[in-house]
Length: 288
Image (cartoon, rainbow, N blue to C red):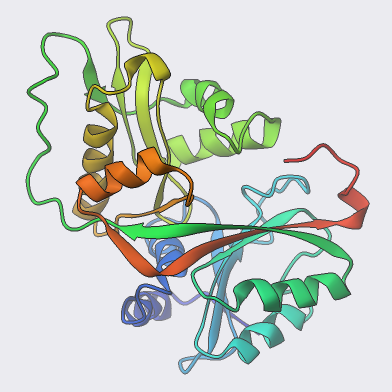
């Protein structure tokens, strides 16, 4: 195991990961954030350098953690050799197996290898798999002509609105998610549309892996073109900062899939896999 701390090497790693798209997108997004102030307190672990075969991004060990917070206790994985990834998993002190956490990646063997190692350590593993998407460059400003008058208004989210997002996110509804969303809003780009009272009615945020997520429009404000405008605006905002504009969508979310197709988003050949791993000591806790 090697923890990569050198800023010059981290910039070189970013360039190396870019040549491995799309499978490296999650790790690439995390490394980009590390190289731009590291607001989420991440670090990089590799099997070797510079000819690495596996790389994992994780929270810095000195960062404050909650053992039930799988949202923040998140690892992104990319490997050129799946055996090297398994060896990293099995090494002492690479993964904190004593807390609830998640592993993300875009490679097909991720689940089987991670599950095999986790089972040996008596952790339960829950897999969710998504279509992975990437937005083409948004070269022009999205059309906002239908936003007439002082409202509705296109802007960004405030940390004070994290509770609304926590209540409306299918993955939310708990203290850990509320804190996580507040951190995302404070650290990364977001976009929202506000009504005449200044309340958000449509929004999307960016996660710790530079992925567009939690795109939502309140039911009474749907079919107005808000989701389209929010998605294009956030994609353009990320692209203007040099980030890839990537996202994930569940196979049965037909409304979002139709929207993405209308935006000419590219559905990637690989799938996005999110594993939530829970030690048996926490298996009796409320489900996150």
